[in-house]
Image (tube, rainbow, N blue to C red; front, side, top):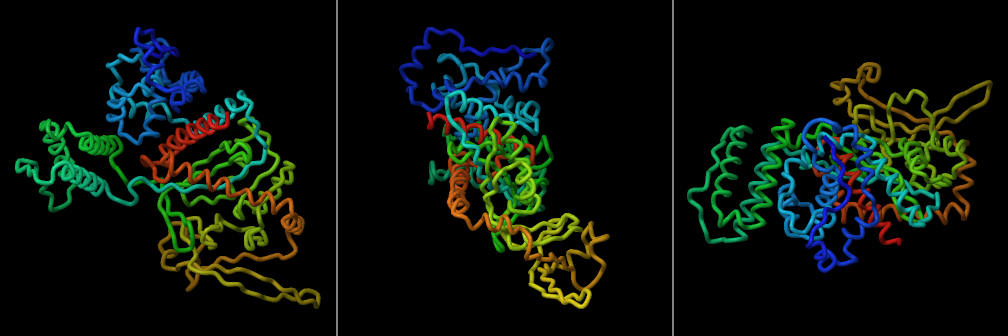
Length: 490
């Protein structure tokens, strides 16, 4: 049962907040800036309003997730930290003397059962735009678009490898505390066949041993590593796996540099540098097709889009036509293949702008490409036909589940794009103007925003696995990033 409580309870010790939490503390300023009451409206359908036990305040649970993102602590360590950090208690609307805090497992249930809406990111961004407008921050309507990469949680490691890495981190922490002490009664691993169940049992024995030795369990570094192992075991019990991320895909940052994970396609206002839209996909999804969704989300958030600034991935024919129809200026350079090429029977093939090679619907990238010039004769006249031909790995095509209708069994599998030199003349002329060149130079701003997300908000690596949890991570990170940006602007 949901029982809203949006005000801090009365306490004779509340004056401690004024004494010990500075006015410029970011958590204090964030709490004063944003009325988190909208969380009730968004999550009301996730609770029973008139039956059952009283649920933990969803605003408090949501704020806990913001704190977890900023501190990178495990759930258990985060709750422990709240006991003695007054800035945390003030942000969570707790009285200074509060000692009965939530059970850390409640955060796991809140993430998995309450925050499951796919459009949570869009709603939180719209809320920050509303706050910005209420404080007189003007948005230019010139949005910069790009995607940022996030590596999958634990990369490609198996669950047993994850547990052993965490055991190694625990052993390193013990050696850092006392290099000379030896613990002969510590459980020994005996798992020659690399059986996952045996490894789980060993982890449980190790945790029990360490928690029974108070001289070890009293160290914060050891507690944090034990809690990391506990969270991994909980994930294993709940989902049946730790690191086998079925939603992550292999993406390309360059022709030779790949990564396994996700992409977040972002739109950012040029002047205020507030993120106005975001779409989370796996790493295989191309950037260009997301432009229409980013524009629609930005307009839904209350920002009128006048122009779009992006790299060559956004200059595809569909985007050019869509922007012309909406009377939006597109500051994106023409790509020599996509923008000048036509292929009606594309069957799901797309160009990866980073590697400059085609990718098939199954996710296999072409090995190489070549330019081919052919000639056609029509009514006695000779016409030149320029094409770019991409060559794929035939061995992969032979076992591909999508080979029917795509691979005919030959020695080569190719995909060609015809280049039409007379197309896109209007945009090519616009591309050469001083106006275009001046605004296109502003594209670096979103690269800086991508770096900020990774450096300050832990966006370089997924905290968990699965597309849904990546969407939740992006929602919390971008919401907090926008709030702190508003604080700097005002």
